[in-house]
Length: 75
Length: 249
Image (cartoon, rainbow over all chains, first blue to last red; front, top):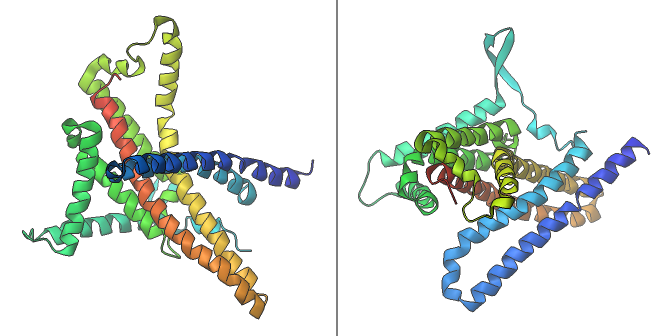
């Protein structure tokens, strides 16, 4: 296979990982909303936990985006 | 298209000292690190020098960041963790200020280099190991042996716990570095779309408003990420320190 084509294919494949991060982030916000609508008075105290979970889940999408960007621009 | 990696280039500003035939330069990275430390020191020392009973705006900013970190440590590690307050607070302020400085166009982001974040993460890692053994002796090894696990799966659990402990500095450092690097590359790519589409004339200017608006939204997201990743680094530091203070699950 042409090395350039393999590089672009690899970058595209690496981006599949971002789908997993999207599922994770959606689960976190969806579950938070479901919980917050049941007990709105307790929701305000959990926003830091919410953002912490969001940042931890989002980091894995960033990892795969990083691999794609490194393939495209550095290697 | 402009190379989006170029913004992370380290420039040698002037030579400082020669160690074992290796010339050590003062780089732009070192300059922005000093700038971050200087800004933090100015924010913390300047407004609190007067110590008014009714704080000025800057004084309450310094006091609020102090209380924020103190509460974070208290809620994750308990009162005993407060002896690590200087370490955790310095880490938080350094990462936060250097991330936010990096968002200003034409500046350099210190935390977008893995050597910087890996140094910070290894500092935390070795602090946990040294303090854990110093305080608990070999009781620190209880960290790898959870209670209430059937004895026949214990060898597997110990290996998994050990691996997860050893991979902590990697995930701790790559999380901050990758967020900063990917965020800045994405900003640069979307911003270069503006000039690329704008080159098509009047219709291009109309089309370029879309990536321009997207750049503004992305900058806001990056501001959130810059603050959030500083907080995530801090709270993970607290969680790891908690293992050294209270080993055993």
